[in-house]
Image 1 (tube, rainbow, N blue to C red):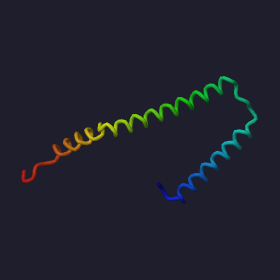
Image 2: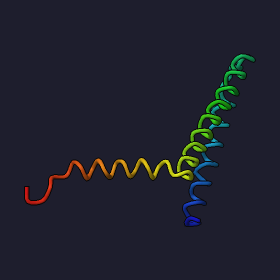
Image 3: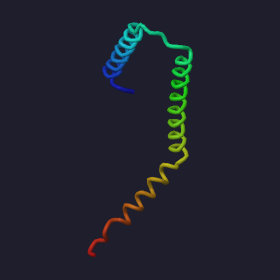
Length: 87
């Protein structure tokens, strides 16, 4: 799948980011109201849903061949833009 050192390095980096985020979150002396929590959770859910939906559309487009047709149209356009030899 991938080089194990890269995966381990990325996991270490993720762990450091989570630890730093938890430290910063706990060091702030203010509290968030219920509306803030609702907005935070709603934003995370909507962002993940949008990202997953767009990835799903991309994979479906590739599986059904829509990307091949678009690539063929681009290749035909590129061929039309090239000057004819000897002209």
